[in-house]
Image 1: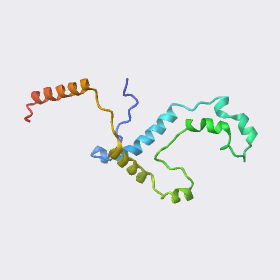
Image 2: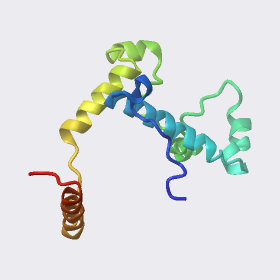
Image 3: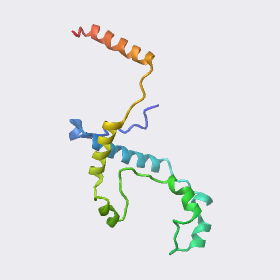
Image 4: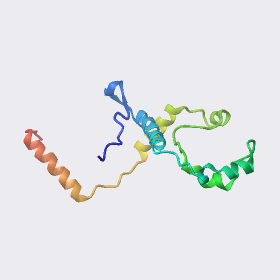
Length: 140
């Protein structure tokens, strides 16, 4: 079933009476993270990096390791959730999850340019609308 992975209610507030773009951004972020977890985490010699852990040690620095660089983008990459240290977060304005979600929603609304629909699709949509208007005697 194609839509089986759909999470119902993204962006909805007040039992669906109200829709909020920032809430949709936040819900999407959480759904994406859930999807990542449900998809499972690869456990192998490569992903566990036991040799690197032994080499670097428990108090070592993993950030400079090639292995870390090669695998860092395979984990959760949040665009909206800020995981910076508090001092850095405050230096960057200290915006919380909701504030960043509103900024992202506004950016999308102001800047997103969808690809145009193919002419064939536009004509079919127009045909469906006109057929429905006739069926329900909608006056233009």
